[in-house]
Length: 305
Length: 305
Image (cartoon, rainbow over all chains, first blue to last red; front, side):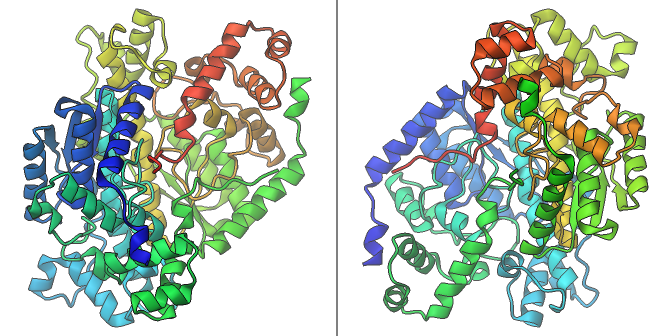
């Protein structure tokens, strides 16, 4: 039953998004759009929609790798931009991030040479092993000071998140110089569980796929004829080499989307649990992520007089 | 009459803000707050309120100068931090901003040596002279492509705004490493006319003085016994050396607050104009700034299906 809630007409939705992009560019009086292209499914689908809406000459791609970016991601991002025929620019952010002193944040003396080669993955696994918590959910759910490796987790969090914020700065610089709208590429699943960086990848002027769950983005990608090479990739957060979304969040997108859409539609949690073949604990975990990430989806609170 | 709308009980408002800060730190399970201290009135008032709410040991100041920051600003910021007895850190952002290629954006061959010494001020005045528009309102209100020095204005905008965004990245890095809330220091006047940087100085977890007009911030500063040296300073945007707020916005804060509060309370525009001794054109200009900056005060739009 839950599956039905996620069904949609690809043609209709694609047209609505394209019209939305066109209207916003006119409303804001801009000469086009800029978006970060990571080589992942979300930014690729956004780039395809932007090209359909505005034509290839009004879409600009920024490819912003840094020290930890796998070469394969950059290659995929170039492939997407070339495939679409849009203008793109590669800007390496390693120096910016280095200047912020971020790469030196994580040092584990006991790391082997192989572990060092992929230090963040090692750090993630290290924390996971020691605490049996994953850094992502711990960072969202809040961490008590007596958690082992508390300060370590904090550093891993800062290490990860600065990358998306440094990218947002680059998007806006480029947008301001060229009079463009910044297109955000977050989807509804990420949005609901806090799987994004506040003022990082969520920073944008318009959010074309913000109303689509991740599994719907995949469905739309097929309709848009996004090459299989991109559609079949395992989603990663583009900040932790070796760490994939579904491991960090703790669920497959297929499962999490069913739970989220069930909760959205007010379905009884026991029914959701039964249909998803999971126990209520897991639903509560997702509800908790949703609740604790509310502040990331709202404007900053002010006192009211 | 309009003046009366701006009156408030300083003790009551101060207490409400302090309680708000305390509650939010508990709600978010943080160990304190971090805020950027510029040496201006807004961040100083916020720092004073945070200290009153949490005690000096839970308030951390970040002083983030860059190449264009006047030495006096940094000295004032240090004076505030020392005066409060809070921990603070100076982090120079020149290298970060340089790495983004921003300092090279503005080049006017005809600049004299003296003008070069203060290049952004020169750029501002240059544009102003050529177009009789000021870059701030032009950037908010939208610029037609046939405006003289169009691309020049775009670059000046990017040059100015990146500084606040680079600071926000530093605040969050520090906050994440030390489990702190990021305190924003924008006031209601700036908020209403768009005199802030989207995802820059407005990026924060809580906004303690976001409900206070600028002239109310001054009033509160006196109640909090902020040193005269800070209260009497001419407000500047902390990104354009030599450019002060009131010149860039085009009105004194005293005037703009009366107009804004009049519009907020639904007072007839003719009455506002009469009481402020200005003509309706100026009220329309403020209304236009308010309208065109709406997107800066809202979450990014998404298409709705």
